[in-house]
Image (cartoon, rainbow, N blue to C red; front, side, top):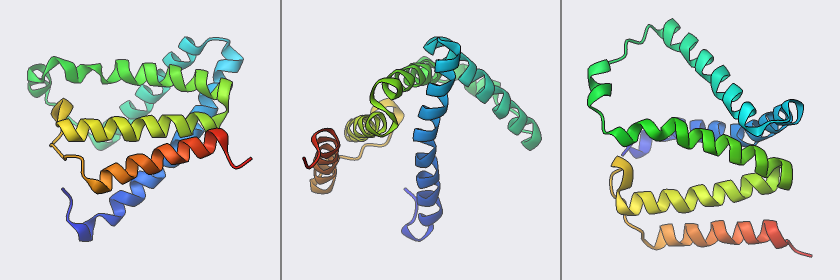
Length: 153
Protein backbone atom coordinates (compact mmCIF):
# COMPACT_ATOMS: atom_id res chain seq x y z
CA UNK A 1 0.00 0.00 0.00
CA UNK A 2 1.23 3.50 -0.80
CA UNK A 3 2.14 5.70 2.16
CA UNK A 4 -0.58 8.26 2.92
CA UNK A 5 1.72 11.22 2.16
CA UNK A 6 2.55 9.92 -1.32
CA UNK A 7 -0.99 9.00 -2.45
CA UNK A 8 -2.06 12.35 -3.90
CA UNK A 9 -0.32 12.02 -7.30
CA UNK A 10 -1.76 8.53 -7.74
CA UNK A 11 -5.25 9.71 -6.81
CA UNK A 12 -4.95 12.50 -9.39
CA UNK A 13 -3.82 9.92 -11.94
CA UNK A 14 -6.90 7.83 -11.10
CA UNK A 15 -9.13 10.86 -11.67
CA UNK A 16 -7.41 11.57 -14.99
CA UNK A 17 -7.84 7.94 -16.05
CA UNK A 18 -11.48 8.06 -15.01
CA UNK A 19 -12.13 11.05 -17.25
CA UNK A 20 -10.95 8.97 -20.19
CA UNK A 21 -13.63 6.30 -19.72
CA UNK A 22 -16.65 8.25 -21.03
CA UNK A 23 -14.47 9.74 -23.77
CA UNK A 24 -13.45 6.24 -24.86
CA UNK A 25 -17.10 5.21 -24.84
CA UNK A 26 -18.07 8.17 -27.04
CA UNK A 27 -15.16 7.85 -29.48
CA UNK A 28 -15.64 4.11 -29.94
CA UNK A 29 -19.40 4.58 -30.31
CA UNK A 30 -18.84 7.17 -33.06
CA UNK A 31 -16.38 4.86 -34.83
CA UNK A 32 -18.85 1.97 -34.61
CA UNK A 33 -21.47 4.21 -36.21
CA UNK A 34 -19.13 4.91 -39.11
CA UNK A 35 -17.94 1.31 -39.51
CA UNK A 36 -21.29 -0.35 -38.76
CA UNK A 37 -19.41 -2.99 -36.77
CA UNK A 38 -18.88 -3.12 -33.03
CA UNK A 39 -16.35 -5.94 -33.33
CA UNK A 40 -14.30 -4.16 -36.00
CA UNK A 41 -14.39 -1.03 -33.86
CA UNK A 42 -12.98 -2.93 -30.88
CA UNK A 43 -10.29 -4.50 -33.06
CA UNK A 44 -9.22 -1.18 -34.51
CA UNK A 45 -9.28 0.44 -31.09
CA UNK A 46 -6.91 -2.21 -29.78
CA UNK A 47 -4.71 -2.00 -32.90
CA UNK A 48 -4.30 1.77 -32.58
CA UNK A 49 -3.65 1.37 -28.84
CA UNK A 50 -1.06 -1.36 -29.49
CA UNK A 51 0.76 0.82 -32.02
CA UNK A 52 0.75 3.78 -29.60
CA UNK A 53 2.07 1.58 -26.78
CA UNK A 54 4.72 0.14 -29.11
CA UNK A 55 5.94 3.67 -29.83
CA UNK A 56 6.03 4.53 -26.11
CA UNK A 57 7.91 1.30 -25.30
CA UNK A 58 10.43 2.02 -28.08
CA UNK A 59 10.95 5.59 -26.88
CA UNK A 60 11.44 4.41 -23.30
CA UNK A 61 13.70 1.57 -24.51
CA UNK A 62 11.80 -0.97 -22.45
CA UNK A 63 13.24 -4.47 -22.68
CA UNK A 64 10.72 -7.19 -21.86
CA UNK A 65 11.64 -10.06 -19.57
CA UNK A 66 10.38 -12.89 -21.77
CA UNK A 67 11.46 -15.53 -19.25
CA UNK A 68 9.20 -14.02 -16.60
CA UNK A 69 6.40 -13.72 -19.16
CA UNK A 70 6.74 -17.38 -20.09
CA UNK A 71 6.53 -18.53 -16.47
CA UNK A 72 3.60 -16.29 -15.51
CA UNK A 73 0.30 -18.00 -14.69
CA UNK A 74 -1.70 -18.64 -17.86
CA UNK A 75 -4.71 -16.64 -16.66
CA UNK A 76 -2.71 -13.37 -16.73
CA UNK A 77 -2.84 -13.47 -20.53
CA UNK A 78 -6.63 -13.05 -20.54
CA UNK A 79 -6.42 -9.26 -20.03
CA UNK A 80 -6.67 -8.59 -23.76
CA UNK A 81 -9.72 -10.84 -24.09
CA UNK A 82 -11.41 -9.17 -21.13
CA UNK A 83 -10.48 -5.75 -22.48
CA UNK A 84 -11.88 -6.58 -25.92
CA UNK A 85 -15.18 -7.69 -24.40
CA UNK A 86 -15.20 -4.49 -22.36
CA UNK A 87 -14.76 -2.32 -25.45
CA UNK A 88 -17.49 -4.16 -27.36
CA UNK A 89 -19.84 -3.91 -24.37
CA UNK A 90 -19.13 -0.23 -23.85
CA UNK A 91 -19.82 0.57 -27.50
CA UNK A 92 -23.14 -1.27 -27.45
CA UNK A 93 -24.18 0.27 -24.12
CA UNK A 94 -23.21 3.80 -25.13
CA UNK A 95 -25.18 3.60 -28.36
CA UNK A 96 -28.24 2.25 -26.54
CA UNK A 97 -28.12 4.15 -23.23
CA UNK A 98 -25.96 7.21 -23.88
CA UNK A 99 -22.55 7.90 -22.39
CA UNK A 100 -23.74 8.99 -18.93
CA UNK A 101 -25.99 6.05 -18.12
CA UNK A 102 -23.61 3.51 -19.69
CA UNK A 103 -20.71 4.95 -17.69
CA UNK A 104 -22.78 4.92 -14.49
CA UNK A 105 -23.59 1.23 -14.94
CA UNK A 106 -20.00 0.37 -15.80
CA UNK A 107 -18.62 2.26 -12.79
CA UNK A 108 -21.11 0.58 -10.45
CA UNK A 109 -20.15 -2.83 -11.83
CA UNK A 110 -16.45 -1.97 -11.55
CA UNK A 111 -16.75 -0.92 -7.91
CA UNK A 112 -18.77 -4.02 -6.96
CA UNK A 113 -16.38 -6.34 -8.81
CA UNK A 114 -13.30 -4.61 -7.41
CA UNK A 115 -14.60 -4.93 -3.86
CA UNK A 116 -15.27 -8.65 -4.40
CA UNK A 117 -11.80 -9.18 -5.92
CA UNK A 118 -10.20 -7.35 -2.99
CA UNK A 119 -12.28 -9.19 -0.40
CA UNK A 120 -11.33 -12.61 -1.73
CA UNK A 121 -7.81 -11.67 -2.83
CA UNK A 122 -8.66 -12.98 -6.28
CA UNK A 123 -6.49 -12.81 -9.40
CA UNK A 124 -3.30 -12.24 -7.44
CA UNK A 125 -4.53 -9.20 -5.50
CA UNK A 126 -3.73 -8.75 -1.82
CA UNK A 127 -6.73 -9.52 0.37
CA UNK A 128 -8.63 -6.49 1.64
CA UNK A 129 -11.72 -7.63 3.51
CA UNK A 130 -15.10 -5.93 3.38
CA UNK A 131 -15.69 -3.59 6.29
CA UNK A 132 -18.15 -0.85 7.17
CA UNK A 133 -16.48 1.71 4.95
CA UNK A 134 -16.47 -0.60 1.94
CA UNK A 135 -20.06 -1.63 2.60
CA UNK A 136 -21.07 2.03 2.75
CA UNK A 137 -19.24 2.59 -0.55
CA UNK A 138 -21.30 -0.21 -2.15
CA UNK A 139 -24.52 1.31 -0.84
CA UNK A 140 -23.56 4.76 -2.13
CA UNK A 141 -22.66 3.39 -5.57
CA UNK A 142 -25.99 1.55 -5.73
CA UNK A 143 -27.81 4.70 -4.58
CA UNK A 144 -26.05 6.70 -7.31
CA UNK A 145 -27.06 4.11 -9.88
CA UNK A 146 -30.68 4.17 -8.66
CA UNK A 147 -30.68 7.98 -8.75
CA UNK A 148 -29.32 7.92 -12.28
CA UNK A 149 -31.90 5.35 -13.39
CA UNK A 150 -35.01 6.71 -11.76
CA UNK A 151 -33.92 10.22 -10.75
CA UNK A 152 -35.93 12.76 -8.82
CA UNK A 153 -39.03 12.94 -10.99
